[in-house]
Image 1 (spheres, rainbow, N blue to C red):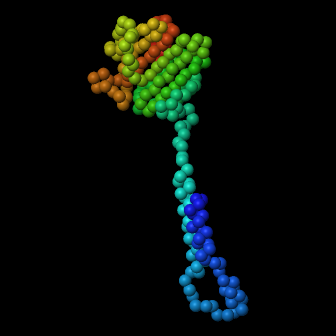
Image 2: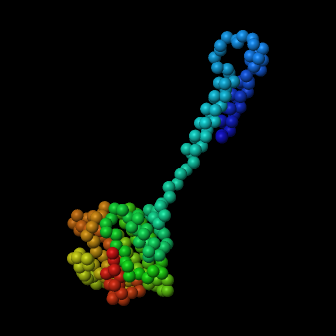
Image 3: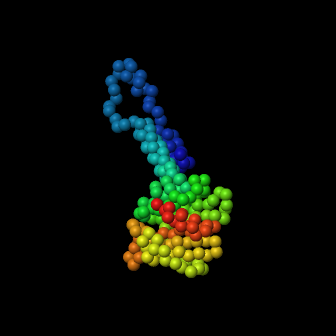
Length: 214
């Protein structure tokens, strides 16, 4: 309770006394009651004190911040969570509600680390090999910057004639639009924009991962 409330309560209590002890003795002696009066001043004081105390408690309860927590297995929007590939699949499918389909690679080692970032309309998962930190795979909803990549080829991945495949040093990248639903659909290029990036993999292994997306 605040200091101001304490002072107000003290002033009220000092201004009103307890009920007169003569009232009880008159009743025992059988004397007639005095004329009916309005509620005793001490009762008014008690009611005022109770009202002030109740108001102070309500104010305190409303002032306590309440923090929403994400359900178990769900990554809070905009944050990155470290887990394994199985946990990544659970987290992404639980959090991403405005994009369909949600595609993740199955050809990733169960012991790999997965760093997951999600929102309702997108996600990014970066997998890293525990035995070789130079090997990583990233799958995400979005359109990456392809500047600096070498010769682009058009593999018609998942039926997308405008899909692109390119390399830059040890990094391979595949960009395509998956038939489906997205809040960021470009009417001139419909579908869900996806990218798959891998570092430290030969072409053959990269395509094994790409073809395991489901």
